[in-house]
Image 1 (tube, rainbow, N blue to C red):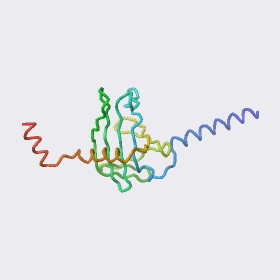
Image 2 (cartoon, one colour):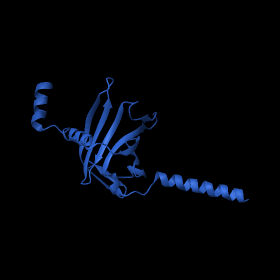
Image 3 (cartoon, rainbow, N blue to C red):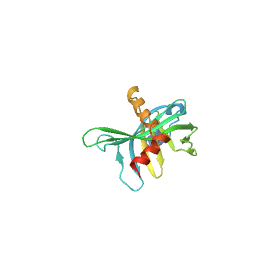
Image 4 (cartoon, rainbow, N blue to C red):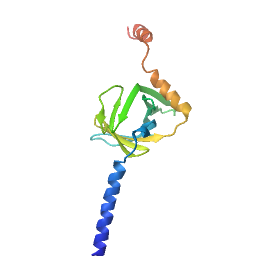
Length: 165
């Protein structure tokens, strides 16, 4: 009887611990910093683990003032990294409601696993993100690349005029 009670208590404790790990209570301000995609999985497809083996990852920067930058990073066959800016603008994150680039806020778009790990879903793709401490020089370079994503109007006009006649 005691063994059965002990096993039941252990099972309850494991269930409670697992539930806590997946929905940790972490302050919204912990989002500030650099996040790198660890894995992604489109529904119905095999999971892609990001990094050297896949040659792909994503980078997101969240500033304390609401600054937001997102880029894809690709490792080419010759071993060079290519930064492909995706977006640069603003984000909001409060009480589980997340928005970037002025789009409508979504509840639980990002769910804390712990202080350095989040999971999220975007258009049927399930992502895992890890908070990283990258050198400032690298972070600033990628953020600057993202800032350059929005080509100025005069350059847009020249590109269209000379490259897409």
